[in-house]
Amino acid sequence: MTCCILLLFILTSCVCASLVVDVTQSSYQAEENHNITLEWTFTTRTDGSLNSLNIICDMFTDVRLFTLFHLHEGVEVPESQHERFAGRVQFDKDVLREGRLRLHMSRLRTDDSGLYQCDVFTGHDERSKRCHLNVTAERDRPKPETPNSSSGGRGASRTGSPSQAERRGWIVLYCGLGLIVAGTLLGVCYYLRRKHSTSSSAYKTRSIDFLHTDEDESSLLEVRGRGSKATSEGLVVMI
Image (cartoon, rainbow, N blue to C red; front, side, top):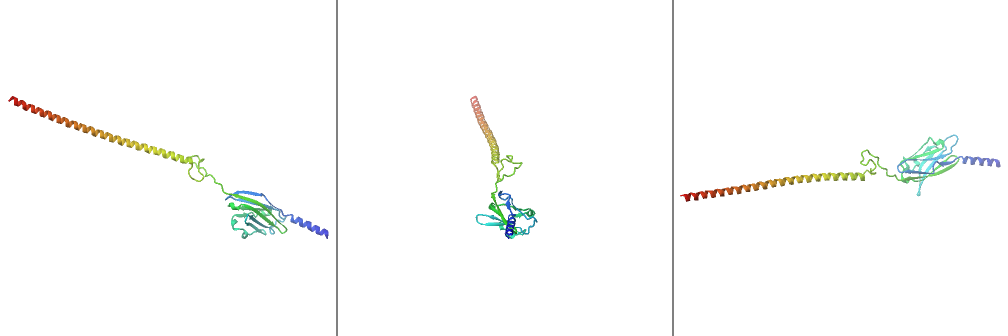
């Protein structure tokens, strides 16, 4: 009787020790809006049946836990999944028979950071294992270089605004255009002033000539008057 009890105890211990759960990575690092795959491994029965396999995976935070995956007797139970993971968690059913649980998480968020634990239940035992996931904020990425960039793509702004080199180029261009316009205006003003000065000089010359002509005519009339007077006096003397 004692031997039978010892044999039963040994067999029970062997069966209970047959289930081993582990993680392929104890810690994961990912970036916001990216995807990641969390993987657990566990020992399976020799017949490969999933009818007695039950798995519950939860995320632990400082406040509470959230269920992201539930498998009951080899069938997924989506009703147990928390709404924050709805549509963002899928698993590979084909690798379950190989003793692998692969959870694909998409569109990661920073609040997805935390501890993830999967509990594996069989008809004889229960085991669990945890891993840690850290999701960082999405980094600013530089814009792709364009062929017509004024600085060859190196000075391209990350936010789409003009770079410092581009602003300097526009400033130089505007200054050049301003100088050209100013030079043109100065040339036009000089030309108009010169033309006005030439017209004034011609007018003064004509006025002087006119005055000279009037003076000459007056002198001529005066001379003619004197001649006439002299002639009259001559005639008087002669008479």
